[in-house]
Image: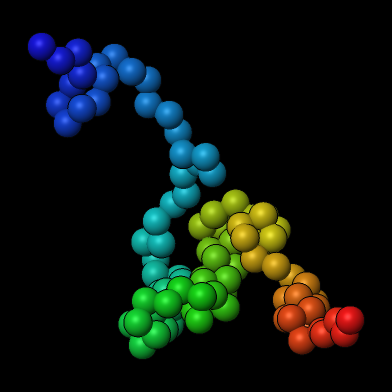
Length: 98
């Protein structure tokens, strides 16, 4: 017999909280516009999230502004600052002649 519980879970194992903790649902629909923009962008780009990254950032910023998630620097969530993005794009255009 298996020592695991239903669906392979171990009985008696303590649940581990998510790394970032929990955050409230947007029950008042305060960030619905940003969410809809992001989902529309995903649909129109064939689920290419890279093309919709700016809208993802906008949605997370809305959630922070409305206290629906803890405020933190967006760079900690995988977003670079605008100046970093411009400078990293310019690096690809540089040529080194030998």
